Picture 1 (cartoon, rainbow, N blue to C red):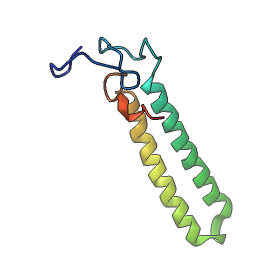
Picture 2 (spheres, helix red, strand yellow; picture 1 turned 45 degrees about the vertical axis):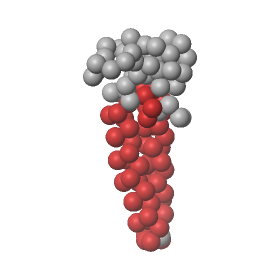
Picture 3 (cartoon, rainbow, N blue to C red; picture 1 turned 180 degrees about the vertical axis):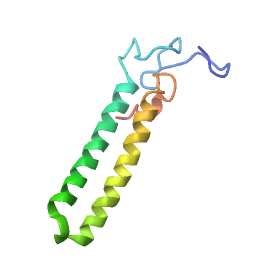
Picture 4 (cartoon, one colour; picture 1 turned 30 degrees about the vertical axis):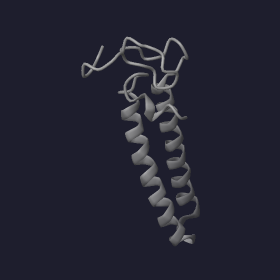
Length: 101
């Protein structure tokens, strides 16, 4: 499947030819969807840990709590975006987003 009439789709990691609709590269086994989900889970872990630190420290650390709250908000936002993008990627489409992980 060619999206814009260009050349044959290729895997973003090993550069082998693809038909364009594979979810996993048959040559190298690259699965950007699973890699995206792993990155999303790691960001959610950062969110949970920072929110736990805020709850556990309570009123004792007002200044660092704001920093942790900002970290939690950014990590949650990135986790949601990464989760959504991971369902759109294939080895030939948007695969470079997760090819380096």
